[in-house]
Image (cartoon, rainbow, N blue to C red; front, side):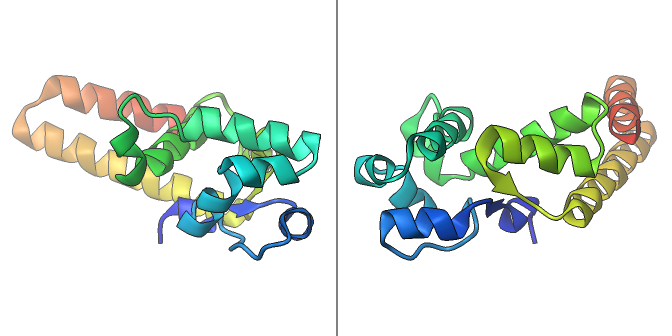
Length: 151
């Protein structure tokens, strides 16, 4: 299961109440995004919630090519966001706090930790394979990225 499947709307009940329509808790669920980011959905929520939803839309739902929106673009952008927060030295608890403050999102710190651990393991595999293939540049990039994530 991808990390984006474990990212939830922080104030789901309040948002559902304001919209007067039921939507999934998952922030990256199609029905959630369709309802929240339609003009009508945004007009029904309070100003603070609208600001956070618009921030989310600008950060993750604004590809150069509009067709990319349906090819995993939001999920890739969000994964990059989490990895960048970790590279800044934030741990899983702090990453969850920042997500909540910036975008009204919630995740369990254990899920974030598991995602980061898997990312490090993947980079270790890339580093090893690059070494076997003699690709010194890729090996260096993987090693540097792994160090940034490991802290």
